[in-house]
Length: 191
Image (cartoon, rainbow, N blue to C red; front, side):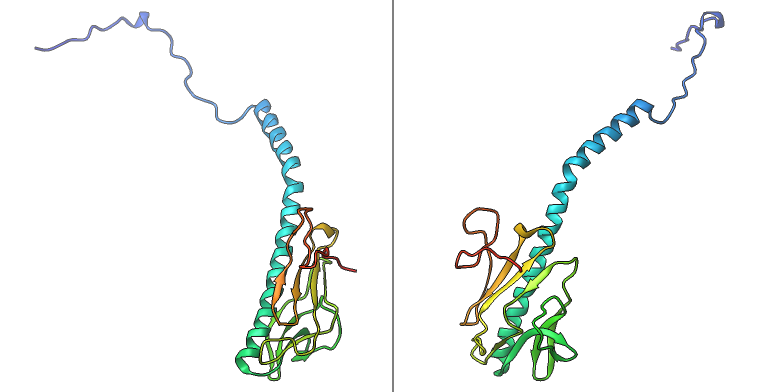
């Protein structure tokens, strides 16, 4: 069986509408989007800057901790004195400027080094070097704390404390005030 469609006369057909769609955004949609982005940026940017400063500080302190551990382990493994100090050429500079390149120095030369501090930050230590002996203890009794202070963010200062036994300890916020302290509950500060 064949089915037939009944054809409608052309006069009864509605005129065809323009079915092309316009692509794009209206001015109001663009303005609302810009307003939302501006509000979110105003909220997020200060937090982002604080986050970046904290990350930079954490990275620097971790690198200092690794240098201290490398100096101690190298002294134990090689059975001789190894120093951690500001570098000049292939050895220690003798100056107490920890913002320059610092590194682990053996009698044979530099074992490992860290680039200079950037962004106007400070790295301080009370002495011009620390030296580990073959037993992993400090040979020169230069006990102290490496204090890392980011520029204009004193509350984010952190440190690495070096004990006479040769062990090192990264500072923590012990009292919940948002600032790191040494094991003796002293805030990490730079002069």
